[in-house]
Image 1 (cartoon, helix red, strand yellow):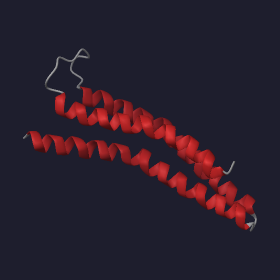
Image 2 (tube, rainbow, N blue to C red):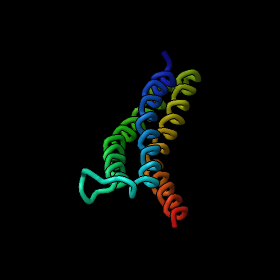
Image 3 (cartoon, rainbow, N blue to C red):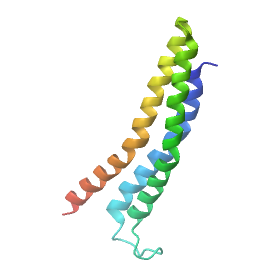
Image 4 (cartoon, rainbow, N blue to C red):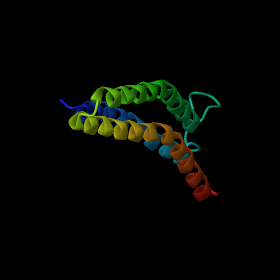
Amino acid sequence: MTYLHKIQKFVRPALAPISATLTLLAVAGVTHAQFTNPLGNITLYDFLLKILNSLIYILFPVIIIMMVYTGFLFVAAQGNETKLQEAKRALVWTVIGALIVLGSKALALAIKATINSIQN
């Protein structure tokens, strides 16, 4: 099994909770005023944003570890073209995963701003 397949097996399950959280954030932005909140003053959007922040804090060290491991793959390749291709793919997938994780909060804030501008 190549390193790319290992990364894909890791990234695909990680995308599902992020996309589900973003979907819930969008729904929360639309419906937060239409029901009584059992959590008190915290809106559903704020609650989901706290979950998203927690995911970012958990996944950020994983991103750092993957970057270090990718660097190790480049060093271990020692000019072997096949191993270099695998290391390059690992770098690409690591960067894509980092952009998804770190860009998820920006996307959530953009969705909220869009929903707020539509409601006003």
